[in-house]
Length: 162
Image 1 (cartoon, rainbow, N blue to C red):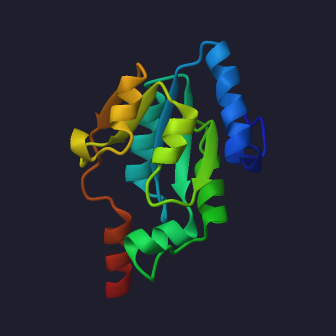
Image 2: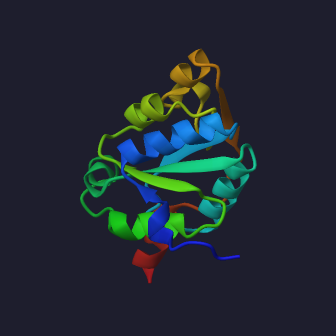
């Protein structure tokens, strides 16, 4: 059942930190993941849905436009951060969305201290930003198998060929 406008699931970090404290007090198991989510596709949906199944709340950190540009190049992002946030927030299994300006979500992870940190299985444990911090604080780090053949880069390349 539709409960709230998607914009209400998009938070500034101080507010989300307070909400995280409340969730901890209520015994919620909070999962965190992050990404650019420039062009939402089946791979994203599958990954995020599986991430949510690992806990009772799912927080998604989304790279700011400036961060995406630094990481992916001058032609990215295809969609502005407001649109990317609303699209991710519209997913029923996502509980909170927050934008981060840095190239990595380490600051977010250290501030929020999620119970479970999740990335796709295209990352080795040593490549997962914040993994050491989460484990040191009693949490878990998990990887999720990705759906083969789906990536934003691949979609962009296919569009350019048309």
